[in-house]
Length: 482
Image 1: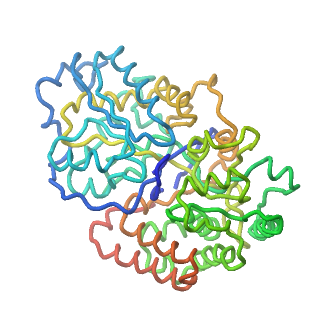
Image 2 (image 1 turned 60 degrees about the vertical axis):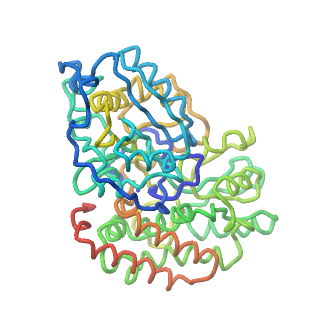
Image 3 (image 1 turned 180 degrees about the vertical axis):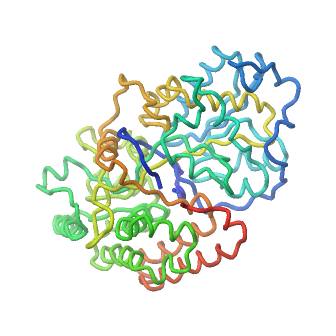
């Protein structure tokens, strides 16, 4: 997900409405290729697993009854955002609340945590992200996630007259919902789309494209100059789906997004928007406008070649700048670009996929549930949101949650400007969060498409088959993108 320095694949992964006149930044992506947990289901979201050593006295300032002197077990995905922000949070938590932390920063989320979940001994709070993310829908189905409603309905740190949920950007809780319950808090505000080098475009005299025809023309000019047109992270087809699905959304409007999320029998086969979107990407393949070799590269390999001016464009979410920080030339001038428009698109050029990424979870069997809830409540304070922005060069789901003294890097700043230009013209697919198996099938179809092993008509058939299969699961009727 997200985010990240790992081979993110899914969600990430994930429609934001009403978004704000404020900036946007990174997000995690989750990965579809997860093995199911051999789960021991724990029963639901009560506090039964907390023992007396973690239970204190509740009060107005201590709504969950955190016990001073207790310990919190924190595990954080150490990807594009690093984990220094979490260490800063933990230090602040110890000073303010008197709870110390055991900290683990890792990219091996599944390897380290699946055995702990299965043994009924999970951490207290987890940033469940990256290539080895344990899929949220799998954890939920196994009864291993806490319902986060008590945290979201608690008094906000910055304004106790309001609930925590009232201070969040509208729509940002959606990706963490399973069957009507918020079981994951996607913390980072993210945008997805195309990226280019301002320096390369200036040197070549190219104007950032607003239409798909203009995009193809620049890719052709790049090819003539010995540069690839479009790069993508070929081994992880989540990334090319950013382009395909954005084209579908902008062509068909929010109804095309909802058709896929709501498992419509004509979500792909029979959808003019889906057909136009996949045919547009296949045009890049057929005309030889991909960066040579990109289909066989990992996310960092493709991104690094793009940083070396070997491609004009790359698809990604707004964690890209952090992930490539050490490999980006100082004068590269990283820029974000909304997906260019196909003819007769229902959304404007400025429309972007935007929302929240990097899911934080509280396991139902956490030993220190009061401490975990209070920690998450503090995550949604302006102080901790600002700490995150300083350490991770990105914004959170808290409205106006970053102090104005924080300076963002050029790529992230360009997403801020894109978010302001988009206004309410934002969207977000929720199926990667709701249906990881379906997401994997769609990604696999895209992998075959980019390698020219299938053509758009077969891609549409395979994607529709994945939708139809998911629709047969009775539980899917409980998820509705309204």
